[in-house]
Image 1 (tube, rainbow over the protein chains, first blue to last red):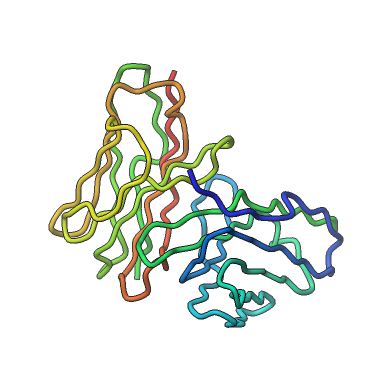
Image 2: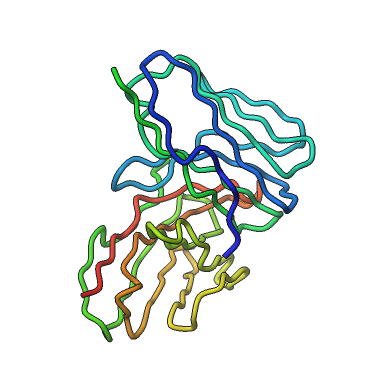
Length: 110
Length: 113
């Protein structure tokens, strides 16, 4: 099935560092979302973006909806141990049908 | 508000059997979607129900089916289980005001032996 291109696939960083990940697609999306998933749990919605060019923050997290509507990025500032997990981007083309990226696994060295 | 709940959390079945998974959406949410998550394929959309009607469908065989009740609770059924059906099955609900903004449950981990 269709998937978004998410990179990097994994990141190993030191506590306190900033993190950046992005998602691209060959198709246009009307909504971009970022989720975090911990082992054995369902994805938790972090940020939702609804307009091209939109920049939205949620605490230390900032995400942007690309102008072309074909990409989005997520930044995490000053990482802490509880940021460890798998981050997924997802896009919607107007229906309740999400297309997901492959995920970015974030590991933090204390 | 309580979140999305899914039952059971874990399930072990053998090939050829069938299974029914249940999902209760966030109160007031009328859209319920189902996803399959596997290490190889990632998160794949199965189908979406709204007001007891299937509104969107992914690319899965007919062995995968679902339904939604008048209280918005939903069930999905997989018949004639195959080894490859082993996965985490996730349910997500939405209030439909913002298409695509979905809230996920904890999932049901299905193991087919």
